[in-house]
Image (cartoon, rainbow, N blue to C red; front, side):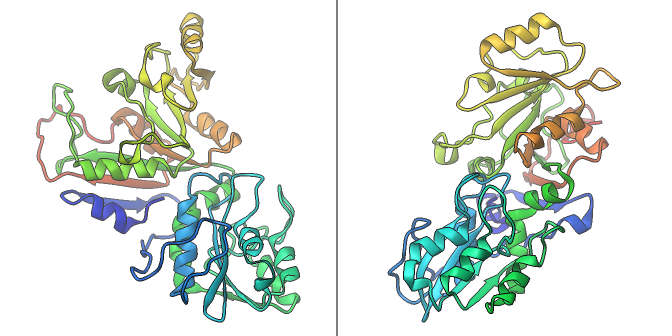
Length: 384
């Protein structure tokens, strides 16, 4: 996810707020620390470096982790840098699921030069078998002498055990606490998922100073600047799914694709529309863009409309609730089961209101424009 300071710069004329909500112990505040301006750009992950002496290697590791945010779920994005005699001898970042973790990428890049080196890594190395062997085993075999990690693993079943395993093998393992908040900025979705099995939900909206998202007649225009919209597209590249209500799609015909710098990103998040009665048009852009589109419908959706949307190329599933609306909690549970552990909700007002009413929002990201729209009947950012 883009650091807060980058989003603030992008919002030039707007104010931006990023606030965690819900269960406080599950979340950490973001400090948005930026990479040192004097630091050379990182080499491609997994490639040995021949750069000059490194400055602030943990910041370099964080930068590597940010470069893969959005491509590693359900694993967290992690960066690792191996330093020996003040120089980088190898570095890496977590690969997509099933691929090597950051530590292994850095070790492979360093080869024999890893012996006697210090590893700077953004998350405590894993000591357990999953899709890949334990990273701690590879570190012990490599001959490194020290591991400095920015944050403990948030999974209570393994937190602290990676460090214990390294120390038992004679490797110094140090918690680099000053960088913990910056690391948590990257792993907040993984933290919630590993503890609860549920996705991390971000509510994002743009509004005027008086909290309005459109005029009283429902007409909409761009509230925020092009820079803020660019920041939103970069944010989309870091999440697993984007969720909107069916009314928003009918009104705006949104694409919901990630298009940083005007280019369609190679990796697209799952586009999700919750549309209780399957009223989405067959030619809606959200269905026909790159990547997958899921339309979540309720019990009142007609079978012929479901079939129509499926023929158009959408995946359609029913998520029933005691009422007529889509069960948002069931929908989020399904997304988590599909490996979508971070969900960005982009409205509209009714959708955001329903999520807040259900206590399902973990963080709010609000772009607030220096303008007054007015009108008691003008829609607010959060309905309900």
